[in-house]
Length: 360
Image (cartoon, rainbow, N blue to C red; front, side, top):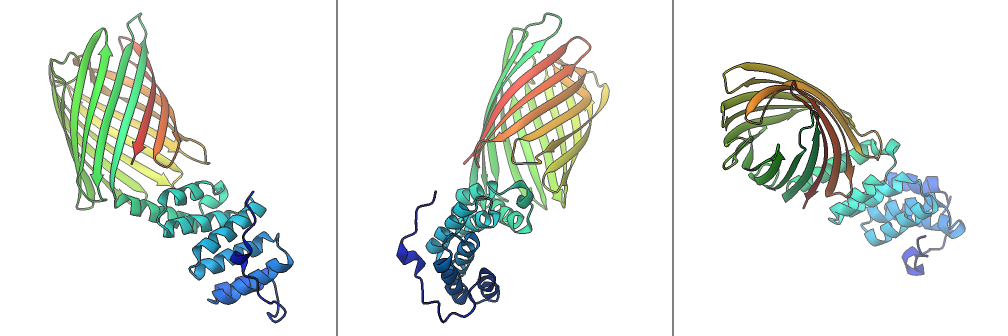
């Protein structure tokens, strides 16, 4: 429960000369650009009905318009204490936190708004404002993942682990990252290291990556990748071209991907690719899938692909199904758990993976 407000924060006035006293009249005065009058009327209502949640909300809105933020916050909290389902109070508290530069607090209040109200234009606008403001800051992102795979045909398990760190300076500034991946397959081990750079230019985000595995057994000895991604309305379009040198020879591939966003709650993607393997043979492939967040719960994803993969030093055709769930532990931490099943001519592989992403 919210503790009683100190008497001085209410500053009750004489109400016998205030005319008609009602929450509706307080709201009318506030919406008409008369916040001082609105505050007076709301205080008079509270003098008679101290448990009126709507009056506390109107008092908070009036105090906010008068730039009296501490009093506004106390009034909004009282309204929420009296009416826990009051999403208007939560949105108002999120807006107050934003004004005071408390981005984490603003996100926390927004995340507590009910699902039905979270698509409200005011809530969406504040979410966009927060995202734009945070994107203008220098940000770091750390990724950690661990994967364990079971193979059919009595083949030994696979184990993989990856760690990466990425830094981006501003929404259009240079981004730099470094990743290290350890992989153990068929009793052989590789350590793959990759550096990446990104830069926004001409309405698109461009990227380049260089990597390699010293004394590689099944990962590429060297690899270079170029990519570009752009956003147009609800669409995200991306293209990637890569060339990798394996012990068996050069492998080149081109991937195209399109993502469509439906009301920021569902994403559907389709992709296609072409691979030229170490023997100059051509493979065509495709993939499709979706992610969904229909409530305040986890983000669910599923996908299917049929294409070529270079593994164990040569290229093979692989069909892959994936499912996963991403949990937002906080505004800066996400955890994803996923399952992958691959079908190849020689064997099938089932993978269980856990990953963590932290931004700061």
